Amino acid sequence: DLARDALVADLKWRNPEWYAELHRRARTSYIRRIEHGQGPEQQLALFDLVFLHRENPVVRPVFEWQASGRVLPGAMQADDVPPLVDMVRRLEGVDSARLAERWLGAQPEAVVVFRESDGAPAGFVQFLNMSALGEDELASDPALAAAHEMLQRTAALRPGERVSYFRFWMAADTHQQVSPTQSLIFINMVRHYLATPGLAYTLIPCADPDFWLPVFGYADLARLPAADFTIDGKAHGVFGHDWRAVPPPQWLELLGEREIAMTPQAVQPPAPAERLVVLSEEEFADAVATALRGLARPDGLRDNPLLRSRLVAQRAGDGDRAAALRKLLLETAETLNASPKDVKFYRAVYHTYIQPAPTQEAAAEVLDVPFSSYRRHLKTGVDQITEMLWHREVGG
Image 1 (tube, one colour):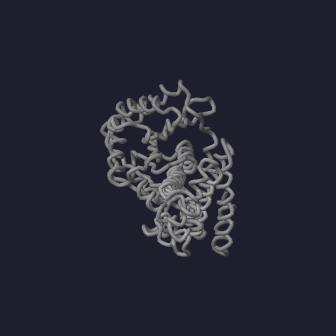
Image 2: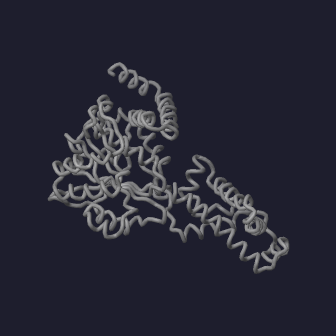
Image 3: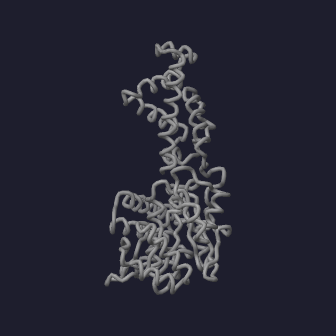
């Protein structure tokens, strides 16, 4: 390890461009393995991705790089519930244990248990799906109630979007302090960020938020005092991230820049003007209609709000977003043409927006249908295109 660290430090000093290129190649390879891998292979790639940040003085102290292989993650089993509830009772208190028993029973599929070689739980994390809970359920837990109120004010969800609250995360022996189990919990948090469809927001409660503030700031997890709560006489601070504003690809790019920077904290998150917009369903539909009307003009998409939507940003990558939006609209419209029952809707869209006739009356004449039928077909076509795009926007 000493020899490796010395070589890395020397390369970073002598040839920072090549150092950055090697990191970029490694990061790209690990992300590809994460996207296509499963189980232990995916977890190893996740650990390798985080390991790239080991030189950062903020990250290094909060990961047990060598020891984490002793504990393995897995799904929660029914007989895990009593020891996990006892763990919460011992480390957080009786009221927290009562809530843990409820949420472990309500969403067992959202729990990852970390086991010793003998199978005994060494810790666990629950990625509680707040979006699946009713108002009464949210109000019954002070953590969820505070988060729900904050989100309603500042980051209201759209239909189909998910909020994951990492309601309980702890090691059996050290709670939320640095440990091999805590390191694996963080690795699995990253897995959740990258693999959860429709993920809009994540929240992490901390018994000692001041301790975790530097590394969570490095990871672009914002401190959210409005979501703080008290239970069992203990105050908890909350961190969160809006994945609609800074989605996983952009987040990984930010961390990649910090990973190789001489002063990582100097690499700032995207400025508000560069962040993605979170459109309501009505705003999204208006933007699609505007984009279709501008489709035939060279600059018709230039100022469209969809250019800063997650859907278009992820599709465009580093490329031209207007070109990506144009292609997306054409491909989505083309799916109507593939269905015999929807061809008439495609043709109305085609002769109005893609290869437009001089007027809508002329388009109806080209289609040889009454004007009222043409208008009905056009509206249905636009509605279907909007619906398909909306599902992709909120589904991630």
